Image 1 (cartoon, rainbow, N blue to C red):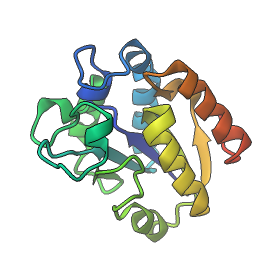
Image 2: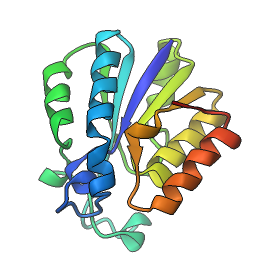
Image 3: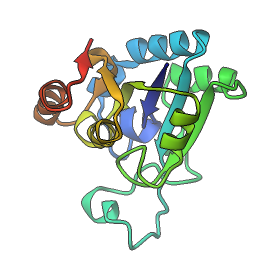
Image 4: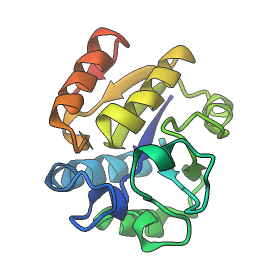
Length: 181
């Protein structure tokens, strides 16, 4: 069994005016990311939208010192970007579509993701979204450590750091044994 994880593909991470945007790189992956998501939903694969959610006044969260405030709960910056927003809206009530609010880079950190995957007998994860070298990377490392097989569609992940993006792709393949497609 497999699942698709759509990680942080939100206005703040992708739109030109986003608070921590990947800009053109993130916008370029939209057609592939959206098609993969539609296909996974249609195939009854488990599709997880793992989305950063921060409180603006959270003085204890380490990201607040590293990055500008982004994906703040209750703001438009946290909404899914582009046509992915409509795909989620149309399918959010399906049994195979699940939204996870996450506070940390990894979709596993502090969430029930591993439990949800194991309940469904899922052994393979397809990771899509942004940022390749931050949230995708940390999710991939946790997934690897938990025994999941990884598939990374190269044209469905992006970062605001091209060097970090390329490094992460090689790390997925050479260190985590992921299949790059």
